[in-house]
Image (cartoon, rainbow, N blue to C red):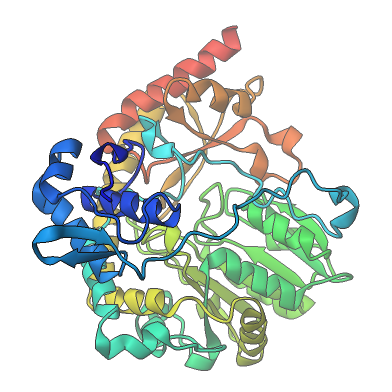
Length: 489
């Protein structure tokens, strides 16, 4: 029996190459039971004519399906559904229905909302995306990344790809972090003092779980990274937000009996303020005097294109009080989810054990791919390219902001990828952001960054990492016009 060519159609919403989409059509037909073992598929010529694609595309799709034993080829007779093809389930899939569980009682501890911020999944479709932390495809070196990923899939690296490290990490990646990445921040650390994490946020969670809990006290910057505040609240520690000033976190404002202080001294999140060297030394002295630990989130130190970055707190620490958090997700791409913790060996030992109990270790293939990308020099070239682009965009956005009389509340001394602004007090930037979305402009309202959102609704952040230089002026023009419209209407 032959399968009718009319059964096949290409859904325009389906992603992937034409070859992959044809393979998917056939595989889904087999898995759904519509195509049965022994049935003959349309010839490659007939299916190509029907779908409006080249014959070689269909032939390659059929060949891949033969390799996966979905199809068999019989000489001049054509392609048939294999007798060994996966069989559809003997019983239909069913939904669980409404259910009888009262989840308001069954859930013992709530964790939602997780991040405290919303970013549209389709941000790239907006014409003026002043959105933070997303990848600009025009800057990312996808060709060399792909080559490094293929190299990591090679036979020589088979063990790194497939092995269970249990609680360990890829030694090549750890070695590069220790010998190349950390020395640039003035940090010397051995392998026993480094742990690879699933991004900076995972590093912050591990740190919080180990150092804090009920009865312990933490201090954070206000405003700060919203997800960090959520993590700390979930730990049930006693949390004190400390208002920052133009130089970041003021050490003298820290409450006594604090156990752990979280800070972003290089590029304060979200204001981009840079903590001066004198204040860094003061903070370290106070940590020794009051016996607290410091968690330094150095999330954007590579983006220092205006002048050389200040020394990290960790590099100035002589007493082992600083735990350092780094990330490759901001400089490579956010979906990578790869970062690292650096701290005294007793702390890293506990972090390693906790990580092993939750996710064991980050995927070996990702670690090895990153190690190749770093060691072959591609990462440094990418950072230099991003620095040049961000510097050019920073000049344009600064000029556009000045031209429209917008008020800057904070911007990085050394560079960064965003500017912190304040609208007039009678403008709620959450409303402003919703208004601008309709004009294809994305901004980030400032309220989620603050401990008390109601008192901070005039702030907003504009990032220039994901918007081209040529679109910045018009985007800023629309922001300024929207502010005026809200004030007058």
